[in-house]
Amino acid sequence: MVGGLFLLGTVATAPAYRYTSTRRQNFTVSPIHFGVALLALFTAAVHFYLYFEHGEQIMALAGLGFLGGIGLFFIGVNRLYLYGVGILYTAVQILLWINDGMPHVGSFGLIDKVVQVLLIITLGFLILRHRQRARH
Image: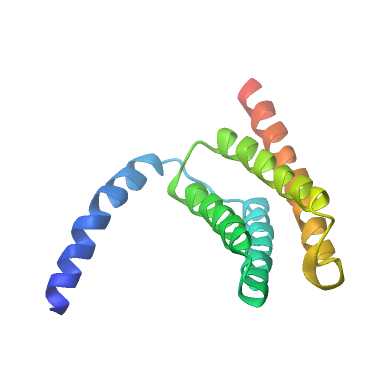
């Protein structure tokens, strides 16, 4: 049974490993990348907390989106596109929060939005840095 599960896991993950190993040849991670991952991880954790505390399924989906972004970064998806999508995704989160009447301001809502603004600023900085390096 254990051997079968191991084999199933190997077969399922082998294509992903092959894809990521070829895409990650020039893959580097700077401290700012880890900072972005921590900001995204924090906001994902807040969304999961709100899901478990209040049962709001949309919070779980939002948290999964942030975790998915972190995963896509570390498997080597095109960074420039990922930064842009991350900015849009996070900005939509803020707009939806405002449109919904800014719920959970007393608990984690406001702190989470400050973290999300920092995430947008940092991703914007990474886009500018990427474009500057592409010119040289």
